[in-house]
Length: 222
Ligand code: C5P
Image (cartoon, rainbow, N blue to C red; front, side):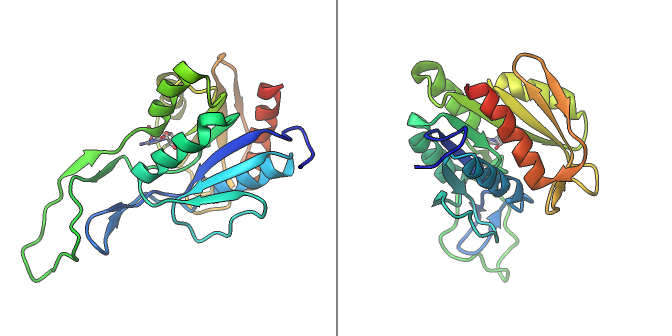
């Protein structure tokens, strides 16, 4: 087995941007490199956790030692998360889940020589809301951490997500800054906790942000 403060703890982490099919070749997705989620998986491994990384498509190499489950859509990610969190200590939802998907996906490639299609969209399931409902009955996963990527009213939006999704902690990510958020190696985050505490971290490498988040997780589990 592994050594460290999270030895024998099962930590499930999602990463990447889900892809919702329009047709055989086209998808709707979000800008997301997966870097913050993969950094969290590495940081959890480093303190001894049993890590399950549920990942939408990214160009990254998964950290050695994690169990990796590859998914594409929000629906597939929901299935994998519900399956893996039944006996998990922690869920960290770092994935950029698409909020909308085409109501029907065409099985063939839509031809541009025909008329330009219009897309009818529907909402995807909110994975954290589904997890919160099941957790209220079963008690698992024991701790849940979410992310909020916002370009305005960062803290107010993060606070309302913390409550609505019944999280223990939310990582509020300011995506209006050039040096933070999508597709870069650094992040500027504020951590908000269910008990009202708040901690703003300076601009840091995503792996340092991950270490800070996992550090708080350790104190929440002991
Ligand atoms: O509501 P919003 O998408 O801003 O919330 C962000 C948080 O919720 C992230 O932790 C994200 O992984 C999660 N999420 C989810 N299911 C969705 C959309 C977002 O679990 N359909």
